[in-house]
Length: 427
Image (cartoon, rainbow, N blue to C red; front, side, top):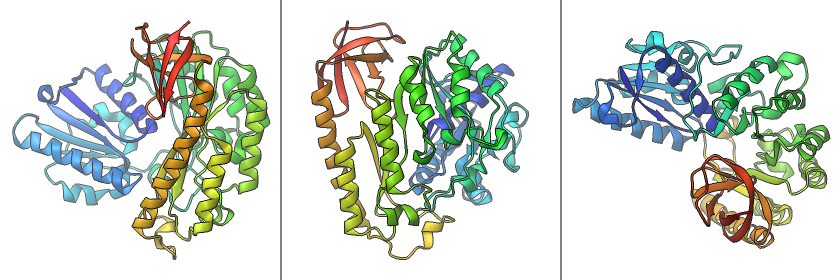
């Protein structure tokens, strides 16, 4: 059977798509990259935000139109939107053939020819995937070290969708990393809902540093990137390991969401402004030229003009390399949905625009320092790539003055920079 995949949402969802696609291929099915050649379209949905659910439904409608025209025979749907909406999604799209939960992805080869709604609870344990497939560039791969979340932030539906935090064992991750590296991955991004909680459930305490020390011993691994770290769990030990180990990019993704003490408390974040600033200062002191990416939510219920001004001042002062700005959206089932003091949509939009403008000026300052500097870069194609300061798919890009071989890590001189776009010359 020929299958065409539509994978939506974050890198964590993409790793699921890679794993179950590999299972299908290993069991005799054929992956195609043109829907006109497919027997079935499989949609791995995101359900984190209302906008993501809207995107999922648009893709389902598109696939069902192809089925109605006779171009494909079946439509199968899985992922976070299925976990979140369950039978309501099946009721809305009666012509879809199969809905299956995330836990069923591990046996997709056994259920892909079935019909109906196949749902089972989230598994307590995570296992190393039996098969691996790259849906990213072959030299850059994601490695999911844990799934689920225990943080219970007031705005987030992930715990209801993905369940409680569950880690893979160190041995399983090392084995998976070895497979990725031997298949050509030179850059491996470690991902989870919270990488800094890694191992808490298995070993009684976070063991991200211990895991990293095991991974850097693998000779085939060139570089590691750490995503989704929480500020109150970023330790001096982690910073010192990053500073002293060439194999770990001097890059950290820390979703901060806000800096106002009142808003952080209302968000049920487990870290106040003093600890956030202490962590950022510590990282910049201990890790030379560290690049920090973060996300902020504007317009959270109760956010005053003073709270927002505090956030603007914070972004100006700490000069983050990459920032994602999101307007708060009321997600059913979350604690923030029924909170009082909801912010008008026009105000949220206005604040998002203003925060993005402030960050643009920060990037201009960073670019002035970057031009003329020599830094490590990775080539994604012969003309495009990224600096070590940019994670795949979400951060800035780099254009090479002259073509280079894809999948290489080398030193380059930044000769021009504007916004998140830079031009570099290999040296």
